[in-house]
Amino acid sequence: QGPLAGEPGYDMTAPAPGLGRLGELTDAAGAAGLAVTVHRTGDTGPLPVEADLAAYRIVQESLTNVARHARATRADIHLDGDGGRLTVTVTDDGRGPAADPARTGPPGSGITGMRERARALGGDLTAGPAPGGGFSVRATLPLARTTATEEPRR
Image (cartoon, rainbow, N blue to C red; front, side, top):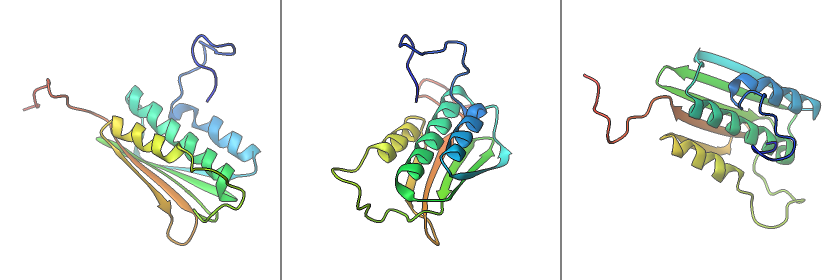
């Protein structure tokens, strides 16, 4: 994730995390031995800042989980925008959520954090075994929100 504003190493000139920096995540995963393919369909940008950051962080956490737990050789990232929402799906060809003999202690908070990030925008996130093996994370993020104080458009 990198340092926060005000911390040593923070670069105020670096672009904010968003899908425009997706290449950095896929390059890092590739350097770790994971083949990553990105598929885009529909309208995937530009996005509202909150949705762009959430999508980036969900992909980031998903790839981190793949690298740490899945023993996968490849991951696929699907970004599908329909104008009103963005669906982000990350799947891998790993061993799925089977018990990890190297894992000790309680499960991590990565999936919970991703789910909370999606829900904060009015979206949702599911995660679990993928059909045919591996693991899948799917987030749906609305790109426009109506608050209680806004009147509906006529």
